[in-house]
Amino acid sequence: MTTASFKSIALLEPALLAPLRPPERVVPPASRSATTPADAPVRHSRPRRKTGLSVLIPAYNEASFIGDTIRSIREQTIQPDQILVVDDCSTDGTGDVARSFGVEVVRTPKNSGCKASALNFGLTQVTGRFTLAIDADTTLAPDALEKLMPALDDPLVVGACGFVLPRHVRTIWERGRYIEYLFAFGLYKPIQDYYERPLLASGCFAVYRTEPLREVGGWPRRTVAEDMDLTWVMYINGWRVRFVPEAVCYPVEPHNLAFLSKQLRRWSCGFFQTLKVHWREVTHIPFLRTVVAIGAWDASIAAVALLIVLPLLALLVSPLFLIAYFIDLPAVLVPVLYRARQRGEVKRALASLPGFFVLRFVNAWFVLVALWREVLWGKRLKGFQKGH
Amino acid sequence: MIVGLPGTGIGGLFYLGMALFMPVWELLQVLRGRSTLARWRFIGLNLLLVAGVLACLWLFMWGVKSLLVFTGLDLSSGLLGASRNGAAIARDTTAFFAGAAWASAMSLAALVVLVHVLRLTVARRAIVRTIPGSLPPPRKRADDQRS
Image (cartoon, rainbow over all chains, first blue to last red; front, top):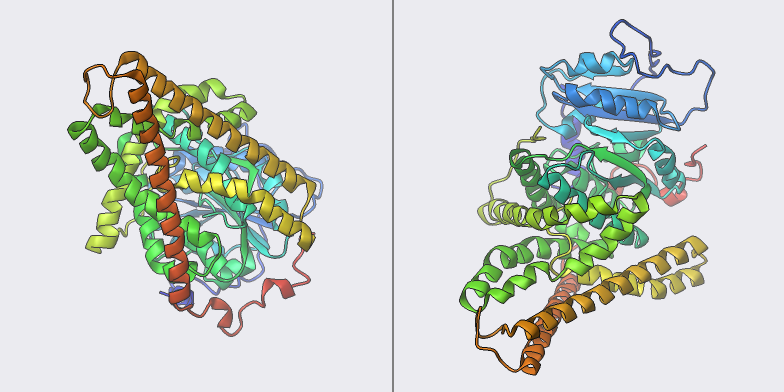
């Protein structure tokens, strides 16, 4: 499906998409009500410089987390002009919790079952020149917005994303994810950014220029990896996306296998879905084409090696082939410990290393299942399930 | 979102190579007037990381080789194979690691060639900017500056 046809389809969703350019809106001032949390900061009364930034928070049954998210936005060193929570027909009072913080809350007419739909519904209400999408379970470092926004000073840049780290690092799955993120966001992504092609702007924390975002029809609904899909659409249009490692966010990461499974299923299937949609255009984008090809290769061939080839070699030839499972330990350890040292978290990183090697087996399994499902069998994953 | 297996496969080799290529790329940016001190500092940092990775890899391989020689374990003759000459074990271990590195490098080279073959053979489709009413190309937007 081309981007043009996606935009046409997006325009045919009258139930969820009002005219793409909203009328002038007056954002209601934050007020202290009986339900306002006692520790929510009061908005300053003196006029402050407008940032032109609107924050979009899509939410479905995120009552437990959304308060922290809004609070972390309110505590930013630069303040957005608009905070808009899109309540996708939650059943746990998410909208009420958000309203209690004095932010704007809009409710979709019916549950869309899709983060991209909820974001696009909110996009029709956005008034800022810049739109920040943040997950309802994600908090930000206090200077995250201040660090992120200068990336958009370059007129060629239409989007930017930051460094992602798990909010909690307790279970083996969270620890594995912590190492993965330190490695990927500490080594791979800065190099991708140097060559001006971050693979994707993470959906949990990314800012876009509102105009180009509307121009491409908002977040794509054709895949379950709307963040990767949108990033590649931006590149295909000749625009740029940046990665800013100093802008840090902390989403809630899977703490158990059930939660992890839903997330990995979505990520793995989403990657292959996005690849199927865009592979022709991506072959014409320097550097990105190689990064994507290597990602596809590692996702599939390395997974086969990890789960099938190495165990067979260990069984039939020599158990010493099991050393291959740790052969890249130095390649992982050096950048991970460097980033951990920057954050004063070396002990945490060392303690989390075993989780990384356990998590890679689970990753490999879901990647192979996604390869079978999306590429070989042709049965697409459609539902969007956050997991918690 | 991360897909795949960070640190495994040929991805690590690719990014090490890209880090080593940075000084060459940056010299081109100097000629284009786009280089800055901050970019050279970033390159220096990545070269240090690459040096650290290679040093640790060498140490790891030396450690594995020494362990195998010390214990008399042999890659080719099974778990508790008959104790062989230490030099032979060391040679076999080196060959094992060299073989793994060679296989990764060849896979990466083949993949890069495949990508470029696809680039030359796959037709480019029209992009969104051909739609009437779309934004002009970003380079032409002189007013699109943050205040």
